Length: 142
Image: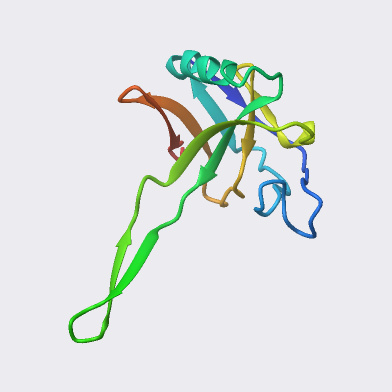
């Protein structure tokens, strides 16, 4: 069983010109077909973790991660690149007062903020439990 949230209105956040509350581009409009699903098994872990903040404004944030690169010089002086592609999604929990409520989705009783702009081919993400920890996966394209 899973619970699904959708946001159908556009919104913006933050006070800096063009930057959102967390220093990323604000979510301009969430496509109607984009969904956020919280699997039933993930709900108790999220609730327990958010309760530790002991504030009413605690939330779940979901962010897209890109590749991680590093460069060193080889013995011959040439650049040697190391590029890793870690798991593409990150979930974190936080609490910060004063964020506009319009920035949040409400999914399974949790406040969820997306810190990325969905790509046209993405249908959504789901929060699962993987090896005892919360993890985000991309929903399969229908």
